[in-house]
Image 1: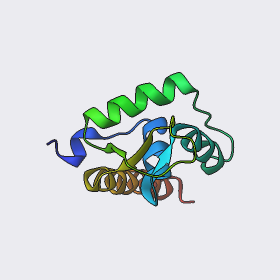
Image 2: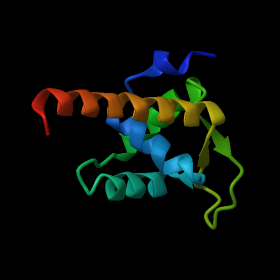
Image 3: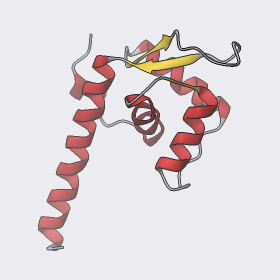
Length: 108
């Protein structure tokens, strides 16, 4: 398995998908809605982008298919792995460092 830092920086799509799964498993449409809501409507992920991202996140060991109970059995549910949670936390630390350093220089 890779080191968390080797997977950084995350794309915005990867970041928001992982964050949307952090608290509980979800299906694709739910993730698309969560990403849009979390980003205040700024980031919208289409189905093609989402499923490509989900495949990449699974290959990296950041998410797994989940056995969640869905009213619609055609919907696949995904869950973040413990490694995925570590990667999200490492990305948040990286982003906070960028913000801190930028504020130091600009004195904001």
